[in-house]
Amino acid sequence: MEYWDLYDKNRNKLDKVVKRGDTLADDEYHLVINAWIRNKKNEFLITQRSANKKFAFMWECTGGSALKGETSLEAAMREVHEELGITVDATKAKLIGSTLRQYPNCPDILDVWLFESDVSIDDVTVQEEEVCNVMWANVDRIKELYDNHQFEANAFFQEALKQLEEEVYYIGFNANNAICNDTFFKGSITLYPTKEKGNIYFSDRLISDTKSEKFLATYKKYIHDHIVEIQNENANAKFICFNEKISKLCIDMEDANIVKNNQSELTALLNNKFKTRDLFQKDIPTLEYTIVKDKDLNYESLREKLKTDKFVIQGETGAGGDNTYLITKEEDMSLIKHESKHYSVSQYIKHTPLNITLVIGKKDIVFLPLSTQLILLTDHRFKYVGGDFAHARKLKKKVKDKVNEYSMTIAKKLQEMGYRGILGIDYLLCDKDQLVFMEINPRFQSSSFLISLYLQKKYAISIAELHYAAITDQNLPFDLKMDISDSYLNCNQQTEFKKLLHFKTIKNGYFKENTNSNYRKIFARSILLEYDFEKLEKCGII
Image (cartoon, rainbow, N blue to C red; front, side, top):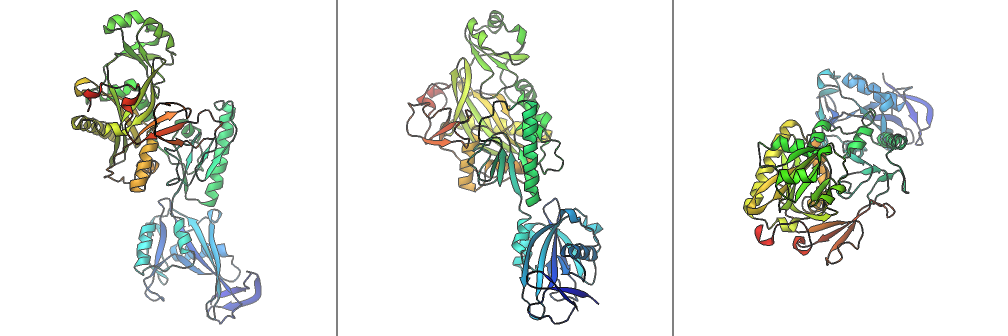
């Protein structure tokens, strides 16, 4: 015979014990539990009622009444063991909710618990008088059963389903509009504050040294403490690092649900401009260059070798043109910072720089709009300052076809090598529609923010969400047909590019004291021909 303790409405235990089936007064309550069991695949272990039970063959979570002397948690763990033959960990149990239910003759207090387990269905032993079937089901499957009146939804049903909804947080030094946004991330942990929702930041004052071991150790502890705090609230929370330094900082946080992107070696290869060109030079037309040791960079010898007074010297790594120099005379050689052991040297070719963004998944490859890069020659360096999507729309069809063909060749090869996630590819469009491959950017690019704005507007999806889906081997949407009709400029000050009129200003989320903060000016037209950007003559490209 089953005996229950009784409680009042405030959960105070009464000095009364009843047996199952006895009539209870309206102010007497017995304790009932529901137990939801979740695995790492974001599924619940649900059971189907046996034929001899009321509401036979209905699906539900495990549940039952607490026995005399049992706590709510003890009752939940016992019911799981009796009905399914498995043991769950009490230290990781979470109470989803508690409520009074005023059933006639049998009022109860319902506690709804959440447990974690990755038990195989083969290892589940059901209590046949209670359960006839069991399965792991994701949120869509449970909702389908519910809609078809095949699932018994008790109190806190919606709250339980929310436990299957992934909450993804971004971790980094700084967040920007390209990757941290309200449509995908639940929040972020960053060094400085941003304007994004759920932002947790380390400091609202500039820190003089953010590279020392002491600071990195302090920041690492700060990140870890907040990860643990968030996971205590939602064990299903996940964290993602897009920055390689942050990924390395967090690599040994074994108790943190950090999404691993185990392709550091491949990313390092792709960040090396020389190795990347060597990787694809047999597959597509690639920029011709010669490798020279840093100590052998001599103007006269290079001039004689290349048979030209105008050539480009580029380091192995570097973004935005920081390590790429245009040399026209011997004095220009003094501008080289000598940050690489080797440099590539090539003839300067009049060109228009192009860039395309892809997202590479396990099975799928998503092509995003092509842009014409806006490059300014500043201190003899090719400085990237923005993108012109409006201009790229007007390129000749055969040029765009070549970009797509070469990019697919690159993407398929990288897909086979195990690359997952966002990727930028740079090309040079030269005279007579010659297209040559330049380099790969295995990361979010400055143009990502504008692409994401269009994605959110048309498809209600962000570029960060696509990247996350790719690195977690989820299916990617295959048909994102989208044209961007804008140009944009990155500016350190609002007054930059003053002569270009009629723009919308977007301010990054950083606080104003941060010197890394910048503005973006968006133009609803092409601006390539309105300023001294690197480009072919107008008549040669469209």
